[in-house]
Length: 301
View 1 (cartoon, rainbow, N blue to C red):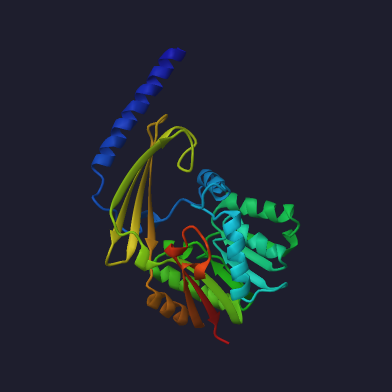
View 2: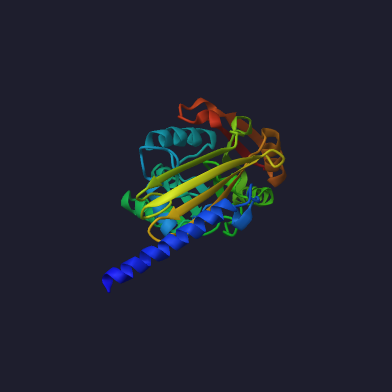
């Protein structure tokens, strides 16, 4: 009986794999922007657990930058945002709280908002472990829907290009939310890819693994990257085939880029006055510094 059941399971998985391969063969030539939200499944519990491991992996900076790089960034933010002990900071898409907790350790009062349940759990634990839980509030939720107090913060952060995973109109609304959350004269920092340096080539890739970001058991991962010149946006289509079950996940990630002039205008329209752009992280020795523009904007007094 056990042998028969195993054979049936294997036969079912083989049938699903065949169906998956035909789905891949018949896929649209190019994805449609923002289809199914156009973002990674950050709030899926299993995916968020796997992503947390990537955030904490010090061998790469694909999800969060390494500790050495973060220290350099936090020193820079401390100066440019004119932070001091007692400053109130809003960290949008805070991830596992690596910046927020570090700022709290310097004496700031920090509120972080993120979609990932695993990241928020880790951030709360980290704050408690280093003795700054009383200076940290971590909210699990969509930053587009989060309610933040008006004129309550001295500084606000939107780091590592996360503003770019929202539609233009959503990004504009988030910038208005940031401005409204700041006290008059408060400062915001937004990190975005430098549009001039973005790879515009179509590319494909594949790899296999026994476990990782895309699954907890053996899988085959395939990806395609497209560039939409009219929208100035990259679209990455990810397919993950789970070999044991024959099931396949499909995820589309849209990454909106902005010219400096466009982002400056968006910030000014949102309620910011002075807007400074610092290409390449203002000379910080980050491994990928040249890929980024960092904006520091001050709310109108």
